[in-house]
Amino acid sequence: MSLAVQECHGGMGEPGSLHQPVCSVLRAHLEKMASVHMRDLFESDPNRFERFSLQVGEVLLDYSKNRITDETMQLLMRLAEEAGVAGWRERMFAGDKINHTENRAVLHVALRNRSNRPVVVDGEDVMPKVNAIIERMGVFAEQVRSGQWRGYTGERITDVVNIGIGGSDLGPQMVVQALKPYRHPRLKVHFISNIDGAHVKETLESLNPETTLFIVSSKTFTTQETMTNAHFARSWFLAQSQETKHIAQHFVAVSTNSESVAAFGIDPAHMFEFWDWVGGRYSLWSAIGLSIVLAVGAERFIELLEGAHDMDEHFRHAPLAQNMPVILALLGVWYNNFFGAESHAILPYDHYLRSLPAYLEQADMESNGKSVDREGRVVDYATGSIIWGATGINGQHAFYQLLHQGTKMIPADFIVSIDPPTDLHKHHDILIANFLAQTEALMRGRTREETVRESGASGNGQFIQHKVFEGNHPSNAFLVQKITPHALGMLVALYEHKIFVQGVIWNLNSYDQWEVELGKQLASRILPELHADLPVASHDASTNALINYYRRMNHTHPD
Ligand code: G6Q
Image (cartoon, rainbow, N blue to C red):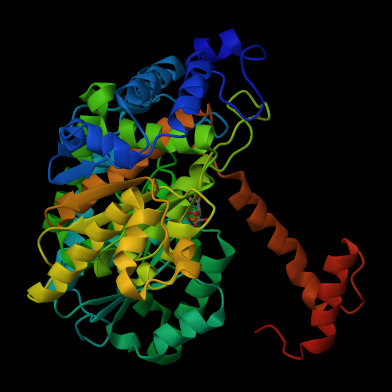
């Protein structure tokens, strides 16, 4: 617990509020800011963009369209200081076991530590083994990509299928999609995660076992969904190849559990290892990124790591007030804990970034969706936001109505690249124009007078109020030169560190996930009951009735 929290816990805090000393000052400041319109802030300060924007590498962040003044930012920076962000940040980089409920270090930063400076966990520098696995992944991927690695009939591999779920799926899937312009021209990469049989069946339907390589990605190698899909893929493969010795050329594993990998029948020589200090949702930089290396090649993967490392260096060394992840985190806290905002939208104006919202949903909500602080006390303040989103341009024709005219405050991140991903320049200009118009409209709104003026002669007084836009809706705009592997690495690391800083301010362990563990147990209990001979009576009335209804109405049998 930070000293600041200790000092004022139980005294200065109000229900629903944070407890650092500066929070009472922030609450007083909020009273002032609640009635301030951003339109007026822009009108009174032509340099607002210069003061509230920041560039790190190829990522420009404009945060001037937020409900902030210099004073707000100063107070928020004090909050970061009082919560001990700098100290916790150092502990993470130093390999301290800050994931205390699992007694683990949190070292995704070591996976992309391109400076190679030693990172010591339990007395061992982990960098040699990190570098060795990156090297092995590169060599293996090159063999497959070049056609040197052949299937059991001597054919080249044309399709790679990653079987994994959660952290062993969302990260690599998002990156492979985002970097599609860099992909190998003849190697397709697929992802199977869902235990709905339609996912595995539909994916395998179009594939040829002779030319398909499976990566079974699972940190624990016990996850029911992944193992069930992996066994199904194995049977599908053996139905044609007939001999188990051929598995060696068609199945590799990414895991921390070598015994279970061997028991599955995968040669340990074809296992790519990672370690318990890599959290699932932070693992795309580890061997879990093998599908990325296969898709875009080792060099591009290294560029991704370098981008993340550059953001790590910025996060570690930049003063808090000029630190992009810290600024983003504090803005989030400002809305979450002071304005009472419940959710935060991620709106990429980029077809290739369309899986980023889903990726960040997990990264953020699994990390900071907690209601118990590091000391095990139930918190009395809001923690992680509901993260959601979709490609912005599609959202404009769907849910933006609520962002503009609904009753909820939903801060949003708008993300776009300056260089178009294709040669369709007119498309890109329209995209950019929409991106800019939306952030402007959210900020400015449209007053009643403007609405009347714009309606002109056809203006219908009765409906004027329906066409008024209050504005004052906060947003961040990210302009990235181009979605290169390096820029993507920076962007993802930026969000990872934002989540870290918020976790520190809320005094959470952002790196455990007890719900996931619970989910894994619960389904195992119900599974045998679905085909029990006698009616099930061991649950609540609703669950019993649903299980028994399923038993009566379902006439299929498990395979
Ligand atoms: C991530 C979570 C979770 C996990 C999956 C898959 O941080 O812990 O999403 O990644 O449950 O777990 P395995 O990799 O062990 O199969």
